[in-house]
Length: 152
Image (cartoon, rainbow, N blue to C red; front, side, top):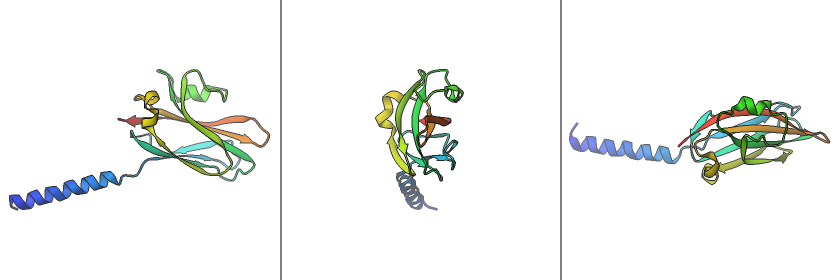
């Protein structure tokens, strides 16, 4: 191949790489509640690039209750095990709540931009907490997940 052909191929590859990068989909984090609403599971990445992401709440068949979530960071030295051991729906003193939502009685989707939470994230991993409430019942923590590392 001559130099002109190689230069053209290089330019085409560069353009394709840029286009693929521009169409990259934001990561999706899903919290799915079982039918009784007393267990929550997480499906999603354990790390993703700093930017925007989507959170999906999937309620299952729990029309008698409501669900909610919190996205938090933890103090230095704290882990998801500390979050799981916290026996209250109040914010633990070692956690910083970035955002929360609920109660919801149906599936819900939310888009978040980490740049709007930059002062609190500062290279810290994210943690997710799930909450559920049966009609007339108390709010219960039903799942905690993380760390989800944010690549700068």
